[in-house]
Amino acid sequence: MSAALLLVATPSVPGPRISPNTLSLNAAVAPPITLNDGNTMPDMALGVFRVPPGNATFDSVLSGLKVGFRSIDTAQLYQNEASVGAAVRASGIPRDEIFVTTKMSRGYIGLPTNYSTTLATLQTSLSLLKMDYVDLYLLHSPRDTEKNIKEQWEALIYAKKQGLAKNIGVSDFLAPQLQWLADASEKPVVNQIELSPFLYKYRKTVLDYCKEKDIAIEPWGALVTDKVLNDTTLVNIAKSVSKTVPDVLLKWSLQKGYLPLVTSTNTTHQKEDLAVATEDWMLSAQDMATLDAIGNSSYFGESPADIAGVGNISAFFPTANCPARC
Image 1: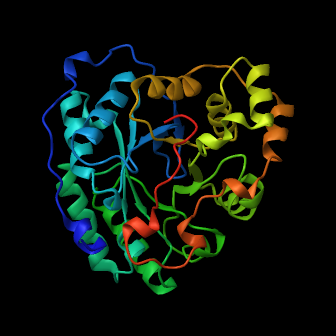
Image 2 (image 1 turned 90 degrees about the vertical axis):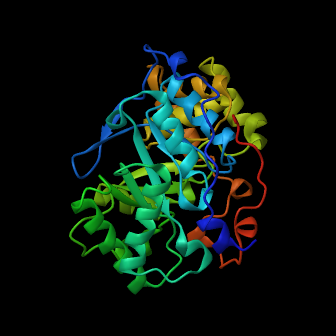
């Protein structure tokens, strides 16, 4: 099946397999940060990238909400928006207490996307989610012309004014693409990019630009892959603070002021991830400096701004190693 057909297919929505009645009333919740438009967003999100639509996504999101996640990240490309929406409704948690992000993904597969098709794509996502609005809507890829990106961004500004998206941002944009939006009436509140200590020194230009423009960084790939579990530097720092390597990676991101995005279908691991945001232990200044300098290109992923076009989803997202905690 072509990627274009995959994107318009409507996944089946399961009934509750985790009872909403099991939701904890005392779950630790990631604290919020204030975005450049004055709205707030939890400082850690649970994502569903590569989680199959249907029961797998439904159970993962409902489990995440149970342990205390209040920020859920999906995308048109992931084909599981309907399952995310079903889990949010089944949770029994008021909609305004859950921060839902989705992304416009048409640029990934080379489909022409202008002002009107951008708005139509958002409406499709809202229909699948069965929601009146999303809390954050992102342009998922800068893989388009400057003219089209500017049109898409103007459509997002309109969507925000209409209450269809409370906040708007971008994903995988580097500094040159962000500069295309510099003269717009609103700037992105978030840039979701691949980022970890291993990538930090290679992402300096875009990180500096976002800091200057007060654009929050939401790292995907914050836990890299399971290959880093035996990295000597990470292991030594983890031992010194009596924590795990994944804990150290997430704490580095949080202490930088970033909003790490994690993906796990394992309830225990979801709890462990969230605990890093809610517990008050810290890495030392020396540890942070050591991690800043750890750059290693062998742990690079493939960010959309960095690679050539591809013809289908499986080529764009090949099977990857499990994150350090998945």
